[in-house]
Image (cartoon, rainbow, N blue to C red):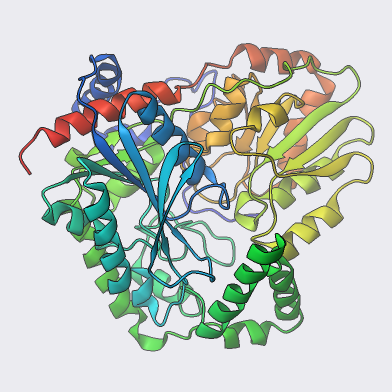
Length: 511
């Protein structure tokens, strides 16, 4: 079970309903009212006829990477296109067949995409914060696109210098804080290797956590990845997941091998963390507005000292994509449970697999949708835990087709063991009328109202999740009550309307 420090819980329905959330004390009533007024009013303001040039910047992008940030960036970019604007996505690509730091221009179903060839080599922790080669490539992309406004979705691989480069050109910028990478150097998950979830970044604890962390590939690994890129390009088959699975198996057999392969950062880690914090805080003067998809995330950043006057709560909008088949009614015999997401330890896929195995046989099925390519050994362990004949790996699906997977489910489980911000898959489930059972943690506990549109359970506890699911197995009317309690989430067009108004407000102000 995941051990938590002071985990915040969303007030339950019933006697605890209406309890003042923790974030309100930090953000303040006046600021909260300002954020709500901007959010509602922006989408209602009339559009100007002059289209804007908008650059959306994201560390990864479709079709190779299909996590939440990439899917959101694609959706909002296309919605802004639909409102008449000239939108380009700038991203990075580790395709080893390309010349490092070169730019590639292509269109993905009508959306212009520029990618910087990035080999992901980290000679030192400093390389995780940015490289001059990336800065030069980013500057060339700015020269080419000449944006009126730049929206940073993620700075990983792009580097912390990018907002200042934009500001130096007199261009305004916005940044959406999708997770905690700017607070946590260990991938932004605020989660240690032993499973402890950190409430706040603390220098001494972070330094110990990062002593053997890998900030990137070694030159030898980059050469292997490049060879895999050539194989993928020439044959269509990607050998990288298989090689990674072999490596993980060897490391599991000999843990010392893993340490030997990692960078040992020694005594300088505290000094480096101080430098990293200074560079991150320099963003405060380079970015005009920070958008927070959840109040929990906003509270976390404000508690770390971020400027509340530049932060706004802005929940995600999701595309209005209907399933190709209508949502089917609940079956009489079996509860259809589903998981949708990347199959990794932080997503807690093993938790739902183990919980399903604890349910009475013949009473529930489990479908796991997603890719395990990033953690093949872990995915193999999850597969081994599935109940034969009653649980399946359903595989990945095309971007934007979550509705088809949801159409065959009665309930979606989101068992993440880290402070998720505002998982898009929860909004997609609600959009399709599917209740959600989620970890009582972070933004998940903010999105799901316990007993109204879903249930919450203790993070990492297969036993507690099984208890909640058994309630739905034994009381099918409870499922109907949860469905009736679902409120339709914000649409991506609403989101794009608010962003459009914000972009115009910023672009019209003196730089």
